[in-house]
Length: 232
Image (tube, rainbow, N blue to C red):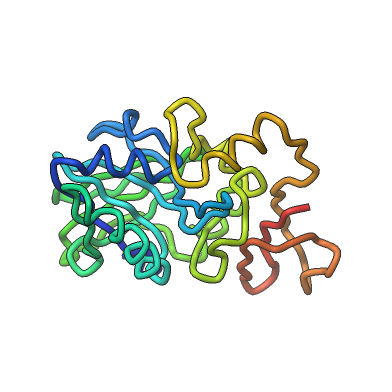
């Protein structure tokens, strides 16, 4: 079980419509058969939270680092109060499992979404009593994310980066066809009129991380090397 991640549940008759107006992803493309990745941005277009999203029955589940959940809930619940949508932290009820190459082999009900790049799979389940086979360690999962230029936005990274600079366009976490969402005006202007001078790059480094590697977004280290995502 990956204890780094938590889960927010969004339910109610207006859940889909509410999320569509808040998130960068197109909720029309999220179904029980097809999950995705999305972001919640501030009015300046900076990413507050980045998450994987999946639909189970009529409810939506957002998987993200646990430490950003209180911040995201506080911001979203201000607007959810005006619609028939409810957001709840269900991290104590739903548990997150991550797989890089092999799917889990278990006899319990699972709900899963593929990562947009590579062979990563995120699974949520209400069952934590069994041993889930083939699950990636947190370090291996983070190394996989970095190698595939998939950023992690925890509390430390929140509200620092525009989607364009952290690869969210290529990861299909932003839709420019769905209509308005929070931060959409700034993000669309950058997309259609801006000229990007920086981009996200993945590095594997022996020794210390050099100062000239750009703005570090994420990094982890094993016994021999450092694995770094930076904007250069």
